[in-house]
Amino acid sequence: MKRTLQITVLLSLLTTGLFAQQQPKVLPADQELSLKYGADRLGKRQDAAMQQFRDNRLGAFIHWGLYAIPGGEWNGKVYNGAAEWLKSWAKVPADEWLKLMDQWNPDKFNARAWAKMAKKMGAKYVKITTKHHEGFCLWPSKYSKYTVAQTPYKKDILGELVKAYNDEGIDVHFYFSVMDWSHPDYRYDIKSEEDAVAFARFLEFTDNQLKELATRYPTVKDFWFDGTWDASIKKNGWWTAHVERMLKDMLPGVTINSRLRADDYGKRHFDSNGHLMGDYESGYERRLPDPVKDLKVTRWDWEACMTIPENQWGYHKDWSLSYV
Ligand code: FHN
Image: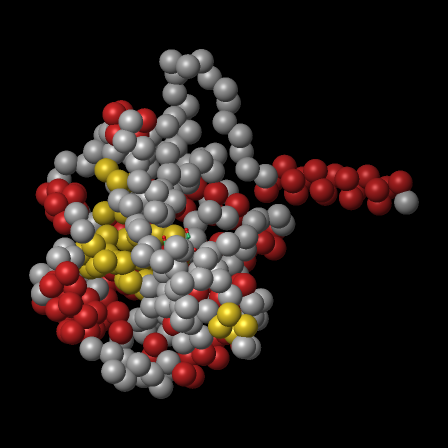
């Protein structure tokens, strides 16, 4: 009995020790921590691609996925929260949610008309959700069963959009959610060896999808990461640094938002020394920099995403509802 208790205590100490987030040492104010996965540059990027990103100024952000079908309503109940989170609000199991794919047949979709509208509107770039948290891919990914290719529509929506926008001279940016509700190996935290092994498989799957996107659509100008706030990702800061490097090697000039990144200690956006990671700050949406505090000292580029309704990114059938 005593021995079992000792083993249990030892095991749980080992588990909490091994899988806990590392904490930084406290250093005197004039010293910086040595980081393997912190900012890889101080100050703003000065190359032509980054200048293009700045000059573009106005973009359109498109969220399009299975959530557009129920539009905020599940089993007769309308949920006020963001429509693309409906699966979570209504506690819909993944396999049931993904059956919406059988209804995905947007036969009136016309990428060229969308691109012409964006041009008229003055958008110089468009960000598109390649995959939101639900896991459904707008491109025919060979690494997932949950893609446009397995729907009645079948066609590569992302490919059509990239071509149409590029034909109008509009840059395309890819939104990509790392958190993926459709994938059995996704973990919110790493608390055991089993979690670590599953999550390693998940990271490999994500690498493959990102390489696939970069290879299939080489004109993409930016990767905008989301769904990167979980402890599992914060404990794998090395991976976020690796993704940034991998995409920049594959697509010279590509820009990447700060939201992807976590450092050695799980510190996000800005590393443990206070330096911006990635190429520009994408803080919480609808947040503009503080004109005094941030802009006075700013040494980084930034982008703000504004929703027109209170907090809706995907289509909701009643945008007049308040979020809370
Ligand atoms: O959870 C998402 C949300 O649905 C939406 O995609 C926004 C866009 O910035 N990002 C996340 C919340 O921060």
